[in-house]
Image 1 (cartoon, rainbow, N blue to C red):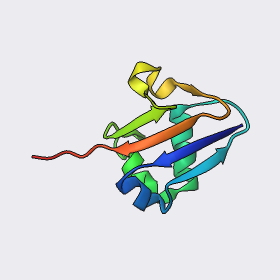
Image 2 (image 1 turned 90 degrees about the vertical axis):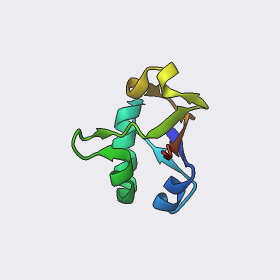
Image 3 (image 1 turned 180 degrees about the vertical axis):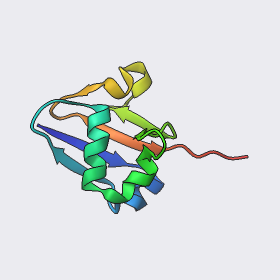
Length: 94
C-alpha cells in the first residue's frame, strides 16, 4: 500500500522536498502515519509532534484527499492505498 505525503509552505523546506511516497504494509490511521513520516523525515518531528503531549500538533492543517481531517475521523482516519495526505502549516499573526 502506498500513501503520498505533500508538504506545503515552510513544511516543504523542513522536509527538503514537496512530496514523497510512503510504502506501508497495512492500512494505518493518520496518527500512525504521522509517526512514520517523522521516522522517515526526523527534521519534521519538531513541527509535527507536540513535545509535551507526544501527539501530532494542532497547528498543522491536514487534508486527506483534499478533505480536512475534522470532517473525517480526525487523527483516527484510516488511510488506504493511493490516498494523499497534504500537510499545511498554520500561520498565526498579530
